[in-house]
Image (cartoon, rainbow, N blue to C red):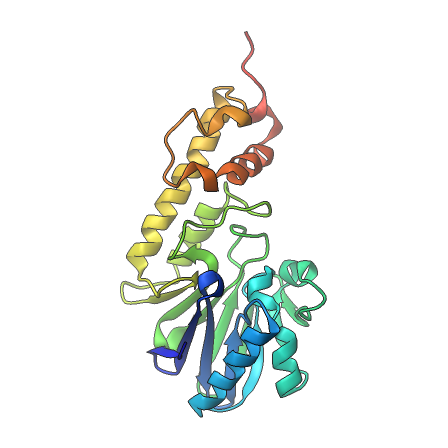
Amino acid sequence: MPFSEVADRVWVRRVPSYDVNLTVVGGERGLVVVDTLATDAEARAAIAAVERLGAGSVVALVNTHDHFDHVLGNAAFRERYGQLPVYATEEAAARTDPAAPPADRTFASAAVIDLGNRQLELVHLGRGHTAGDLVARVPDADVLLAGDLVEESAPPALGEDSWPLEWPQTLDLLLGLTTTATLVVPGHGAVVDRGFVERQCDDLRAVAETIRELAGRGVPPQDALDSSDWPFPREVLRQAVERGYAQLPRARRQLPLA
């Protein structure tokens, strides 16, 4: 799978395994690789593809969050390029499998990687897919790398470490970093535009509002999926409902008084 240059010196490699994206951002001082895939073999194939670009050497890695399909290639990149700095949020680094290895350049809210003639901005906007998601912004190219806060090839992954009630607000802040022309690279699937993110945000807001409404009516979590319409298939929302109910204030989880 070759790289596709989606904007000036921003290349995306879409890997069939998990349909996950690895992105390379180039500048005067070298290349930054954002997310390093799920296995050593996938990372080594990506390294060979990066070198075929002939655009420079890798000088840093970024992990958008701690899930294995975005971090387990860290070790292969460090083996090839030496002790590369790895950037992630503090929360993501703390939760990363030590085999990755975890990030050593961590931050709570924001960081910048200076590539000489361009900067790569890293921002933690809030909880959503995980507690430690970051987005990476290339201002001069009007590109936003969203990690799994945005997914194109499947419904957003509302898993056991997700924050379904907070995800919509996090995407609202993400949208505030975009223009009508911004290209958004999701964690999985094809590059999308602002309109796609707006629609996905609306669907996630519907999930959050439905959880709140059902809990407010005293519907128990085990009955919630069958008690309303949902914007995504029910089979992908079981953990979202469990997580959402657990994250409500305790008073909202009580059955109404008779």
